[in-house]
Length: 92
Image (cartoon, rainbow, N blue to C red; front, side, top):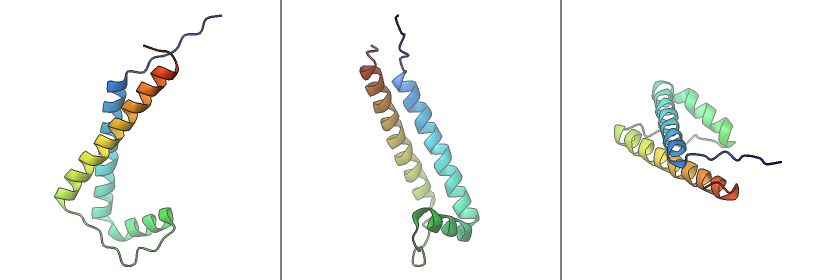
């Protein structure tokens, strides 16, 4: 019996991942800007750490650089994952 292997389109997956990361980062930035105390509490619970001596850096430069860096990283990771998946599955 012959099985077909789905080939992932690496550039499209990379773009979708980058866009998703950008939207999530912007939403997170907006939530921290609107509710810094709640964001500190949530971060403490997620990291199992105290954030007593930490201050938020909520600049628009940080928003732009963070969005770009997270988007780029997610895009590269998704592209690599799709490329490796296609190679491991024998897709060309």
